[in-house]
Length: 398
Image 1 (cartoon, helix red, strand yellow):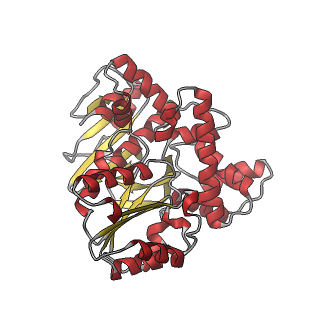
Image 2: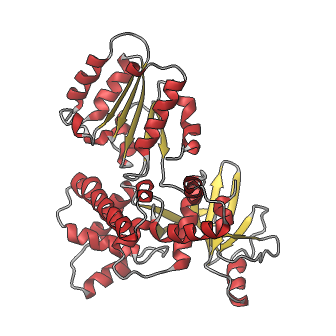
Image 3: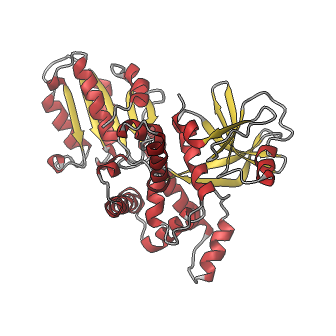
């Protein structure tokens, strides 16, 4: 397994801080491995093994820890002196009222606390009970394409191109690289999707109509990178005689986003400098999970590439929105501190009409921020100060 230095470099400065380190991300994206890499680094800096307490609450060995009182007793029994202890709790949301004991540990013990979870409600729900400024959060993603190239030690351009085709369909969930056979990859991703749906969504939110919820997911996945319209969804379901309310749709969308299965992006009016309501899109955190629930197996290359670029921009630390340039859509407006970039994504620049459409989206934007068009093309079509990049080159750049 590769060392996830991008995340370690962000977390490393907080190893000895009394701030609670919250590591969040979709199930099986590598949070447990990251905790183990943190443990390795703690040992390297001289922390004794008996002062590092790691618990994975999905491990049957810890089945007896069901609530905050059980956890409190277990940890208090482990602490033998007043030196700093490092507490690492994996999938903490499985412990009932866990936030009570975490807050108690922080207030009464000499500890550094790390927790992971597969639901963003860790921050908006349970952790909101903690006083503000008492935690720092990190969002973890599946492998990026650059990490996959590192994992496979690829150097040859043809091998890299083949790996990209594979990534485009089957995504970057770390454990799926344990399998070479496509049928086994499909089975692993299908089982993972079911686990996310049942454990992180259906059980957590007490969803009773599982089939309806799955149909909403299928609708989102088969219409990737499209501006979401609840009206269109309701019309589709009406044709199939499936009764559903607007509230049910939006509740399900909230649950999907909270589980990190998909993320929502809003539209920003570039000239009016405001967010436009009801102009949202949803992108998959991992394209492989989309493949296993895409019944129609629609191959929409432009949408897949757009999804990959969106996830890459998030990984690089950008805040991302869709741009509205006087009625022309710009795929992404990405900001990071004082930096801003504009990004258009297309499959290939097949003719002058397509070139004009993609480059012309920037017409009338007279600021000096970098503007990009990213495609599968191998030739450079840069013009008028707008930079054209091949998507593989973009994903592998430093």
